[in-house]
Length: 433
Image (cartoon, rainbow, N blue to C red; front, side, top):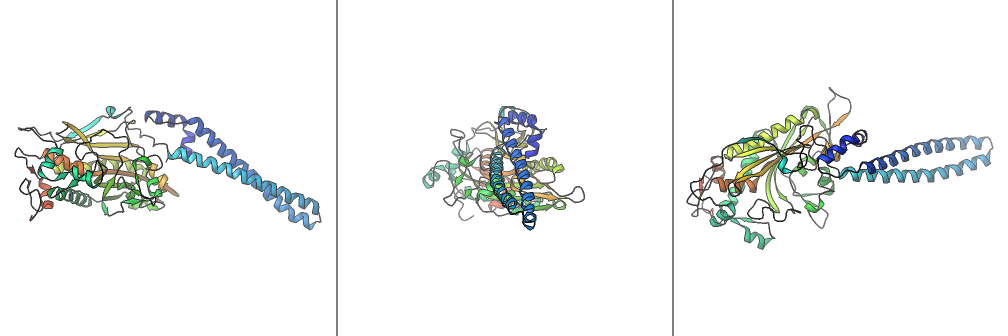
């Protein structure tokens, strides 16, 4: 959520930022509502002063026997109270309307975020690894997985709906291996691991920006709870309405959770395989940072996500999202894209973002640093995928497939796979291993 004072004092900058983001911004409406709010506040203050003065004079009038004047003053106080109530209602209505505007307004892009219209304007930052050249015709994970019996999309549809899938045998074990490897690796690099609810309340979803703007993308229960789209939601809100100590920052958290997304507006995109589905596993990283350190903390978070891909030996590239492609709460985002032979292209596997104080302002997360400033400041929050497990599995299957239809297990995962080095037609059911 943007600071109302910043918006008020920087109307042109906000308008330009929203234009760069391809976002709607009605500066005239904001100014009108802000003026209504300030006029109502001014009227409230004036009426309060008049009421206080009139109330104070009533006692003196009664003591002096000026009963008629005292009664008139009482009547005036009654009228002023009615006017004050009306002014307060106008102020509250204006504040609610302004809050609604700001709650639906995306973050201001950081000055280092490249200006661009859409994903076609995202500059590449660097690459790691070289895509493998096969001496046989490689298969897509949506073919090889079912052939080995480790991925079953048909039964996923039978059990739930389209864009759900079932993992069996060593497919299920590979999922667990990736989750444990990622979580253990992040914990070894200073992240405190959490185990979190998969359901979140309205306040939690609002704190990180999923509500009110993206409600159509969420799954909601009859009790008014939401299935989380990412562990970022829960990890960030752990400190909602709290004041942190600057000496403890940055706080580094990670968690594995199932994630649920309706994928509204994604019809026809990546419908085959396990790339774009309604339920998937993800290990998420979240940081709480000092204002002056969050950009450096973002770079470090990207390195943490890259380390996972490097350990797995998966070729990838890093791109910097432009203003027209960054997420609602983000001011700067890097995407990591892994090489997928089935597409002959790089596909997103991690998104690491600095949200500045945007989420902290919504969730009221502050920190105290008495050595450098008085009072408190809003913390800066960061989040990043470390990584999306299903997409990582797809990348492992495709990049590590062998000519005989087997899949070589990346070396770092072998201990997590009970010593299994290859997934083959003979051992894919995972029994007695």
